[in-house]
Image (tube, rainbow, N blue to C red; front, side, top):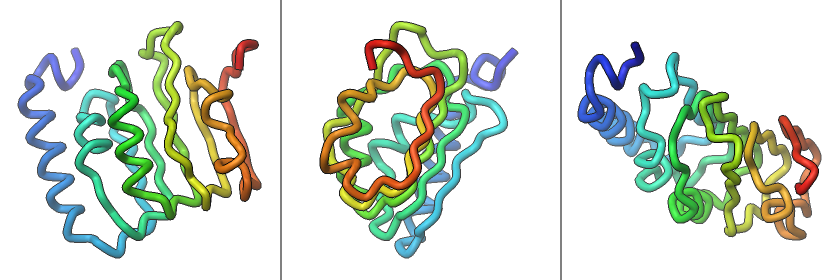
Length: 145
């Protein structure tokens, strides 16, 4: 039984809201790693929609779990964090195998990128994003990417 089944979605939302509220006081935050013990412990769409740390340079997100990643949410997050130099996002195996994720916003300062499964690399790796790229790690790259 996972956390959401045991405690309900409202507890996950409340926990995530409290985390964002606490972190909103960290305006100089440069390095954020979110690695919940279980993928359903955080409501990632709230993080992507409401998280705003102007100085953020490194962002790690592990164990996203079975969510429908909405393109406007990740675009909003990328737009709010143009200083990101290192971006590591790894979804768990819970993700649907035919899902493809991409963002349309540019990360002009990106130097290191690690993406787990189900990312549309053709849409992500554009001239603006790869201009300063020094490290690239992709898990399970499909032939159409």
